[in-house]
Image 1 (cartoon, rainbow, N blue to C red):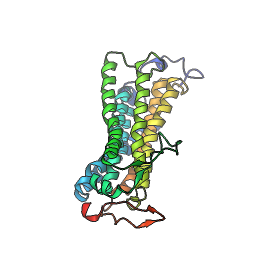
Image 2: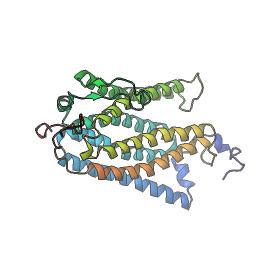
Image 3: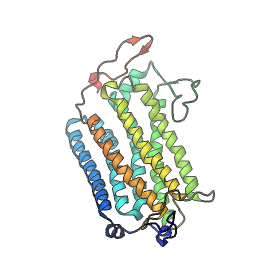
Image 4: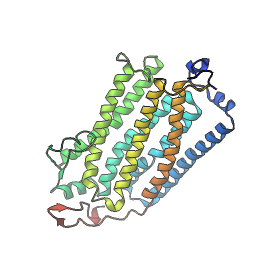
Length: 325
């Protein structure tokens, strides 16, 4: 479709993303198959999630229902938003913002999920009174092993929660601000210069993201042995995978598109094509993650075993008593 080596001579290469009807009318056989298959994947992901919600609502203890549903919904929600962005390219900014806001809440909910798996805040504090938190972990301080361990108190637990909760609140607030500024033609999501508000806001949100991920990593490192019976390590791996694919992968593709590295392909400009590629990749990836999440979360939620005796001066498990679960 390109009339030049980079496809830049076509007028549509400098235009806004096409309308949904333009995409539908210009789909060839390959495009129809691709769009149909990806839409099917996104639909199946959402149906699987709804079925899991019904199972969790009936079978899971009440204190664990909310965090499990929120964490479980990350992949299908992102996949569904990506499907909408694929069909309606001009809505990509809003679908991406919705996915980002949802995942900001998931970061906090995953922390709550780990605490609930050991019996809640009180059980965590009671069992952790003889332990300390290792804070020299990623993504902030993995290169600082000399940092002292922090005592586990109500204050430190509050700070862990606050560190993740701030991201859920501030990310949503900045998203609303971005939409308001965009309607006033003040916000440009592709702005890469120092005088662009979007650049500084994205950098600040990046710092907030790192701060939010740190308490989750600290808690995981502390509880990964205690919660191995509930498969917390593969759950954490899926959570990290969603983070990398939905945030880092998308950011890299968008930067390449803004710089013109991705060739124009009418009716898509270079930027619009980059966004479309990102949406299509996410649909496939989130579909696979949804299936993996179903295997991990759709199970019997029995009480965890008692805390094991200390071996070599370090407790191998730290979990709540059965009566407090």
